[in-house]
Length: 462
Image (cartoon, rainbow, N blue to C red; front, top):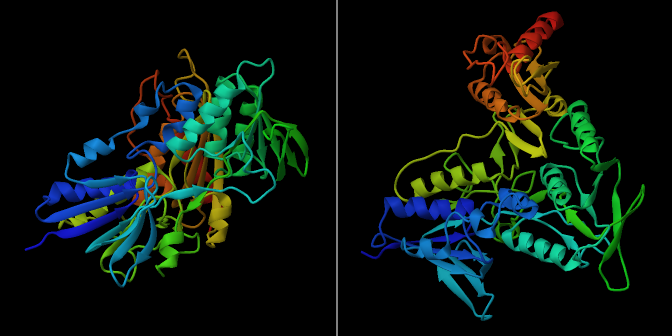
């Protein structure tokens, strides 16, 4: 009996996790696996690129979890620098382009995994393709940025402009600061970190100012201006012009679903592929999808959303590989947990923001507390702010945001578990969390926020 063939499009977290898990469950005599990757690298941490650029991570290869050679040693036919350009779902085949030789060919499949990832948002504005303007989505992007920085050499004044103030934006602002650049962050929004409510974003803004990073809010980029050599010289906005020797785009990403759309596969309101709990593409028995190209269920809001995170992508791959390999797995959804930092400032969030709660018609209360991440008398105690959002009538936890110093961000995991369990804030006040002065005040800041939110719920009535 001939082996089934699994074709995987995309050689990073979701795709190769799926391939590897399927291989653990089925040998090469039962399942042939062919994987296509258009880039130079596989199974790497895109989230680590800002720290490689900053110098915190010494070498590019430190970000690579598994090389193409290692995948091939596990009986996965991994074809690098090969891009799938067409998908024929009725015919169960994909058309591939070898970027090195220019050869194109069709490959049939019995089962298909789409893991095409996400693409950086790059506005169609004058000068966006000029030398010195960089996105940071892939290892190739990171290398191109480092090469561009090296080309600048040692100058008395080196100016970096970061466009966007989300996770990538603030992380790249830190990277440029550590590289010795004068850094300006241009942000269209009211405050940096739009994944937070504006009052918490203001704390991030103040901290960035204190680090020497200039943050300009309400500034929409209208174009990139270049010098006689064609390189970037200024960034033009509706609020003025900002000199730049290097420009880093941190505007965000969108699902890379052009191939899937062309094949008529279903996409959601955020542009990502729609799947069921097994990560199977809705309406297609032999097609699965995972990673940054899909939409996932928000367990708090009850709607799908697009979240580009390696944590989700690897879980999607494990689920897909289990199902393709004859086992069973599901991915129930997310609560929207994310952490980041800019220098020693830690930023965390999970669940809904105020505007998210309003968008799904929830009535809510909020509470914000200030505490320290350690006992106040213990050396190194630093300020920490926690904001909590709860449903007005039931007290069900809806979201938590944290801004503070070392030891603050990972406290959001407590809230993430509470959200997943559907806990009310009153239940949270009794959580048996770890305590010792080097790690927490006797009342952990998350519990202090829960207590204050309980008071807000009781005061609001029904």
